[in-house]
Image (spheres, rainbow, N blue to C red):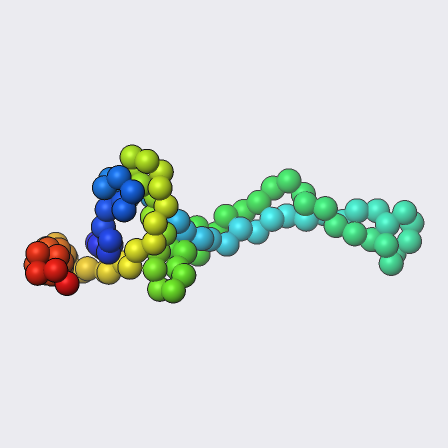
Length: 104
């Protein structure tokens, strides 16, 4: 489980529906005839790609992830905190609410 800060879209207040991620893709390439000259041999994309799903991870810049709003499709950056159980996550959300009410 994880939480975000800010947790809601700064444009409309909606919740995140997607997180921008990255992964490794192996694009097949094929040799192209070099007009009979080995030094002119080139390559083209072969049309097939293989996705390495084990490489999938959030795209981070400046230690923040990018979120996409489910309501307005706005993209915003947020810090992401990992929580290992529901109780830990509830404490983090409560602390965030207290900080907001105290103006921090």
